[in-house]
Image (cartoon, rainbow, N blue to C red; front, top):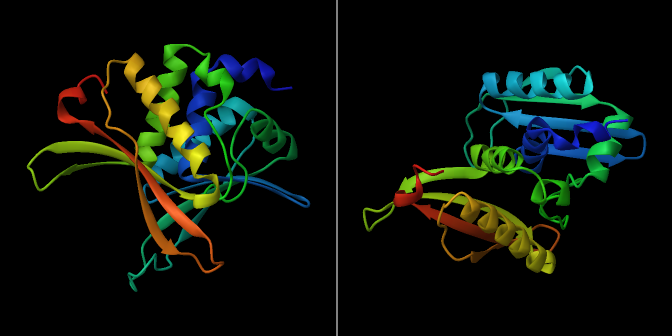
Length: 207
């Protein structure tokens, strides 16, 4: 039903959004696509893109609960879309399902083989959500992208990051070697590992 969308950069961006700050839940009778952001304009953008592609309207909620170790409430926004057809389509084209830390995934093949516009839309979505810019102790500005993975599927996570590096190189954007760093043991006893790459300032313009 939605296969005609596979050549659209907007779909590549939406899949990247769900891969980073979003969530695809397929469990029992639940078929939900959701997206989270501190910025209401990002929620509205995602809502518009989702409706443009699938003609499904989302429901927006405001969340004022504390996040992490900060005891003070932080305003975040969440949007949910309920559609079995859309959820199954997104799963079938390579969107991660459930807890992405424990779910092995790669960049979908239709994006890898797609146009440069599709690839740039996907990378833009990932970096908008998970990327950050900082100045290190050596006074060098860098852009970094990182994700956490269960140690048991670390190799797949590293392959995913290598795919990102390969796409960046197509746009003449140089990135660092892939770095990994172990995090604390999780409540279920599993070990999570942060995977990270950096982009140096000379490549910022190309990015």
